[in-house]
Image (cartoon, rainbow, N blue to C red):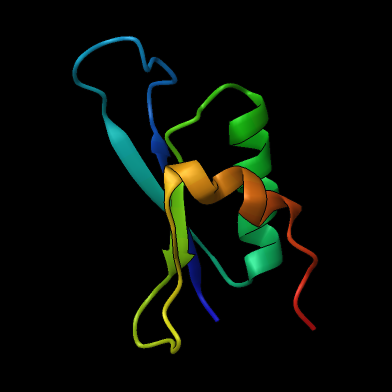
Length: 75
């Protein structure tokens, strides 16, 4: 399953406008590792999810990222 994580590219979230970028990963585990590093570095605007045509599609909003990072890995 292919995953993506969208994050602030510049690292500066203080302004009204920020540049975002998206990175893709071959597994949820890789996406979580990357997201955790960004989250721990202060980016609280992360968004993650699966890329079509995966079903069921998952979208993790920025407010749900902490819970997603704490989820047990799927087997």
